[in-house]
Image 1 (cartoon, rainbow over the protein chains, first blue to last red):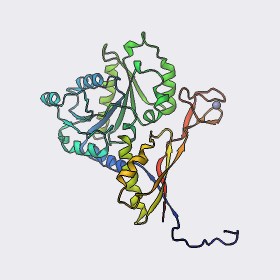
Image 2: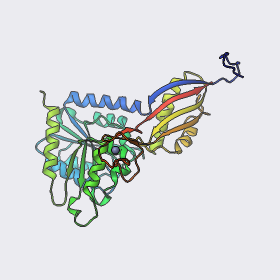
Image 3: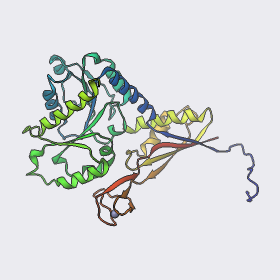
Image 4: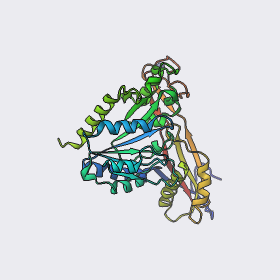
Length: 236
Length: 110
Ligand SMILES: [Zn+2]
């Protein structure tokens, strides 16, 4: 039909034209996340998004972290996990502004839900907003919320191969907690193997091995977080 | 449920670029490191694209395998799910060099 010299094709009723798009699938979410980030920046509030697989101890880490930060930063909480750990009522009773997000069965929070939650918090009176994301490691990584920090909580019993199994999640974070290190003597966990995987995916990532049970490592984590938050909220 | 929001985002992008033309195919490029997006996207598509110009569009997935490059010897390889060591020189000084794609590449319209 086409010889090398004639590049015009006969006109059919159904010609197909390829239209280049080259757009990120979640670009709309990313734009709203950027808006959330600008709002936090403008209000001088540091935002942290906590992600973990079920059983990693997100509950304990969260409660211990809030406890350690009390009196140092003014805290607000966004509760996105339907099986959430922080009792919103209890947080409110403790004088901590808290908002519960109804994810409508979604397996992750997105930037629109985050925007709505932020509008319900007294941002002028806060230094740090902690977001508890839905408990799985597959979905939330792609949906940016606009927080300054994406934190992943791993844990010793989950095994040392998590970075190899969930590379996407380990690439998208800015801090990593390895929880339940008190179990290291009892569980086969090759810390070097784990670190090697993480280092390939996320070179130089801030990593905090800790135990909520013994308290080991908690201060180092909390102090680092306060330092990060202050660098953002105190005008230079 | 993850796939539903992804599908909705794809549809929004597609309709915006279709500019009133009928869409026959949507060409997606999905890297292995990017996300787990499975066949249920077409299933959701058939539901949510109904009564739009993209109702009959077929979704075409181009899957890009994860790719790493060795900083020591320059070897480029596709890592397994158990180790990231360079298969050529066994160095662990490797970096991710591909497989993070997650985009609508193009659409075929009438
Ligand atoms: Zn090599």
